[in-house]
Image (tube, rainbow, N blue to C red):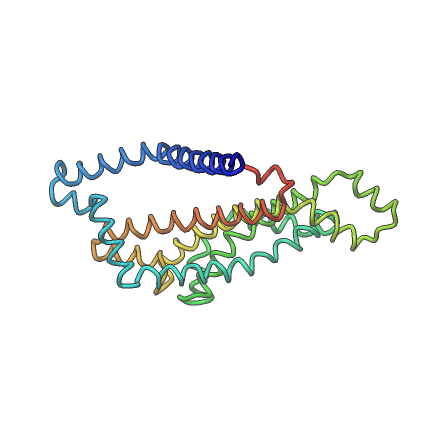
Length: 273
């Protein structure tokens, strides 16, 4: 009987802990609830009809979002945007071996760094007119803009990760007879991995923002296209639905990378938060 009572007490404590955690999370949404309430009251009862069209209440935005979900249009545009983001990310991973080479070899760094430092300050959006001339309007043009947004954060963070490795670790590996290839594979890559993951997080975020901007002017589908098309129809509610979708998906992508990083590197303090 005592064992059963102990198990029951443990289950009750676990359930209570989960309830307290949920309550604490809901408490953190208090400010958001107040803002939404004030927004609803202002748009419904204070603003005139013309102004209310430009700032629709949350209820109208929720209805527009549900209408897009029910018709499937939101998922079509979202899937197109995510596909472009994924393809561009695959291209952008080429920054990792280049960055390892630059961080490991002073000769390679001296040759490549001036070119990188000239191209890096140019915003991805500045490439949009030229990319349209090169690739036309479509997926390749969008993927090129996203690639530019992702490439440099991944590159710089990986270089920093390689250069910050403790030199004594490298010396010890060489003294034990490890080859350069083995040092790069077993020590350098693993030691730089937290910085690589950080670069990927930043790169995916910048790429996601660049994607939407590129789709505003150079695409016939995607969330950016959805927002721009709704703007021409004065559907402010659809514009805001697109913006909210961008924010939520960006948050999900970032959290997913953090979870993957924590599971792959439980020892890393950089991904513990």
